Image: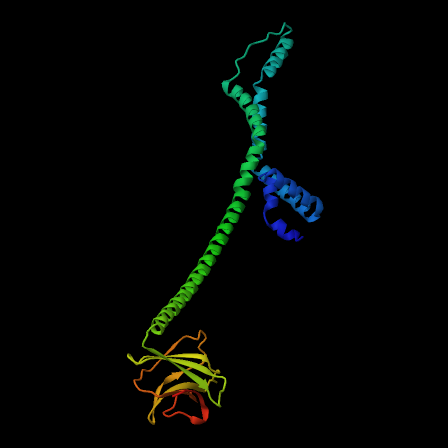
Length: 300
């Protein structure tokens, strides 16, 4: 165990001040019995506290006490009686005992001093505890409290920041899901149209395993492409859809096979087409199809 961390935690000062619970007091005593450094630190704290208390509550000044005691002795009844006997012996007559009224101030002093001593003795521990608490323990407790509040505030700020990030990510995910659902709904509406024509494109020599489906609404001329199974292109190329009709070739747009969700791809509309083909072209597409890289074609 790192005794330095335990010593610097402030628990030993609380122990010496009697501010711990019974269980915590026993735990500190157990640690002191196991580690000499902790026991030595407790002794040093106790010595410092008692030295501080003796300095603060040292009592009246020595000169004041001497003068006060001298004044009491001079005015005490015994001193007056002794003086009377001394006078009688000198006159060789029976000594007379005179009743002397002791000054009120002297009696008050005699009564107050023992009373103060008793009160000082009775409340000594209380004064020590209050002094220790105000001078040593209270600043320590306030420091620990402030440190705890700072830690809690910092943790709350971190949790708030993490919650905001989570909410932002959840909002992005929700937006993506909404967009996907909207696209799916539109696709289903399109596929349910009885005027829709389904055209299958099969792979050519360049990519014999490729498959694609075109959904063509001849009333609206709308075309949706379903890239069922098309090989991924490299970063320098793209796929391009073409419509051929009586020797004329019309580009219906480019697309990528990296469509992760395999959603329907809306292409350019056309009113006339006898054959649809897909070819692999440079990144931005071509003006005419590259027959050498012809990938898919529909049947007439």
